[in-house]
Image (cartoon, rainbow, N blue to C red; front, side, top):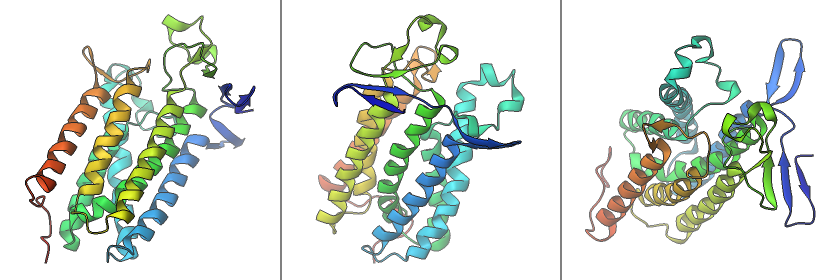
Length: 278
């Protein structure tokens, strides 16, 4: 079983493995299915939200193609670059994204670049698109973290808490080879992201006349706050010297988000955009 409840407050998570099934050389993996599910559900959510902001749902569908093209390769490239010591010796594995090893910050950067180009070509507001995509993005992140569970990766330090994640010996860091249970950081972040989703949707519907960029900036702050502390628990963080890259980027995200909200609501100015308000 994925989760054993003894009783409800006691949860031991055990992955059934990364593969759903295999037929000959064809392998269906949980990671790929979850990414696909995140894209499909996120697209439907953004199309629905677009109807409340006078944006054609078909424009969101077109944007989704650009986002996938920009986000997924950049997510992998970001990860590979910060793990280059390993991948430089295993070049045949650089493109094996189905085995895991993507970074959400790389996906966000790639997706933002794609959205910027798209918005200029379509002559629509970049920030309005960003506000429509932000709830779908955090929903996708909540779903995608379960891929880490199935791959037995991205877990935290050893723990004896009632809620914990069993990691097979082959997947344990050498320093913790005698430890069986670890912090289920995938779960922490998935739950956090769902709470962020609730905040973003509440803002979206309660303040329909909020300034363009508000939802995305709140996403940047709230997601980054959660990632900042959760990353500190992980055993496999991407590093740059002594620094955990995700924590550095999270601090930057919090700073940019707060500056943007200050610009909008204290200075009462609009964000630079690809299309000014008419």
